Image (cartoon, rainbow, N blue to C red; front, top):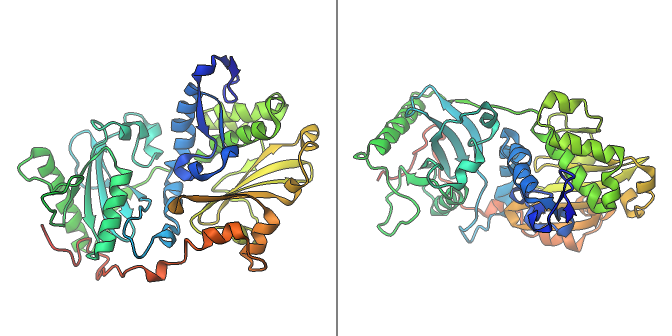
Amino acid sequence: MKTCIYCGLEKPCNDFSDEHIWPDALGGDFLPTFWRTDDVCGRCNSASGVFVDGAFIKSFFVSIERSFDALDYLDPDKPTGILPLSYLGTIQGITTQEGEVADFWVCAPGANIVHFRTASEEDAWNAYAGGDPRRQSKRSKAGRVAVTLTSAEPYWIRTALSSVKHHFAKADKFVTNLQLPPSAKHFKVLDPNDLQQAADLCFLKDIKATTLRGDYLRNQVAIASNADGRFLAKLALAVGYKLFGAQFLQTSYGLNLRKAFREANHERRLKVPIRGSGYLQSAALGAFEEKLRWPGGWVLLLMQHQNALSLTVQTPSGRSMVIQVTDDSALLGDLGPEYRDGIAWVTVPAAARAVGPIHLPEYLAHQIGQQVSPKLRELDVLRGLRNRLPPTGISDPKDPEAGMSKS
């Protein structure tokens, strides 16, 4: 029998599974084992993935963050890269088929994407980019995707199609403005003789008519301003356990972290006495914040200051979130002196690479050009090639089909 660190219940050992403390979707797979645990039961792992990690990852702001500086890591000589897609909301003012909505996504600079899917039955899913993420894992519920390429450059066409294929793995995928070869497997051309596809074509024609009039699409974005609250509490709970073991879970602050992590109601969660600041509050770290930022990377920093240990999460754009891990003096006394200087990790999903743990002084010395860190240098050489990328050839950003041959 084992005790789950998330729910606190004792369960059979075969009920437990591998849990990414830092989510796989944000580069967790590339981090060392400190950021994973097998002391989480399968039920908590699944629920956390959808309602805690998922709420954060699928939030509007994080959708934009994931695309930030991702272009820096594309190989200009090999059009095999995959870019994150940016979510721009649900299209308004154009009629969809009954019971459906149409989400608008962008793969910069290669494509505009419309995702037709079943409308969410519960309002809670409206703040998830693309709706209920569980539907995307089932081919029968994943919907249909129509891709309008925005560049005639073969490099960007391949990059865009690879990115869409990766993001919408189970959806039916169509291209609206490219002549596909007979051997094409993953994408098709919309068939006007198919009733459903004909309706999709009408929808897309209305979009094109809107842009040709010089108007902008009206999109609606539902924003969950508190999607980071449970996520940060989960991180601190798991990190505290990894550092201090089971004794941490029994401290008053550890119990409060668990309570905040498990409390779905925002108003009740605010009453749980934990300390931190979220994405929209963005802790004011001054010049330090800019030196901590890694282009396209998520920076995780553990640092002991005064009488507490905190975890700072810095996003690819440079915004910072902070959560206190513990203020228990007995636990803090067990920490090594390196935590007073700070221990950092950086994971870059676009590069499929992570670095850390690395002492904060070494990290900052590298960032200001004082002394090169061999670890970070390996990550440095993977970026900075954006000026060698092929031109997009986009002549008119108002026309999503500018310069493209029609099929």
